Length: 84
Image (tube, rainbow, N blue to C red; front, side):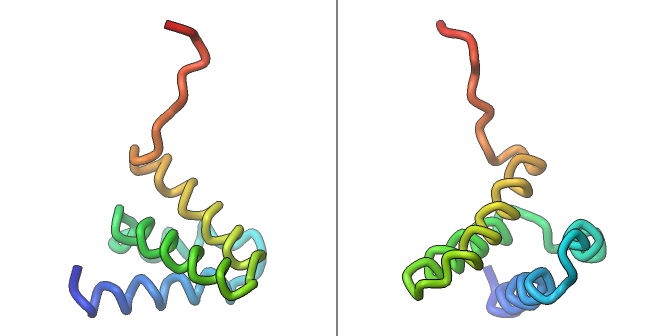
């Protein structure tokens, strides 16, 4: 991952934090070219850092968005409810 792409991810994450509640999908839709596994990984890394810095709300927000994106990208395993 290039430093430039990492900067773009961080800018997008910053936009998500600054946008009014409920407008996150619009922000993400405006940056479809950045929605990939690298963004999800960056969000999880930043959320971990934030949790260690006692910013639990920010960490929870990022993890929630990362989880939803991972599901949409097929990166989040769907747990089977039937027993084998």
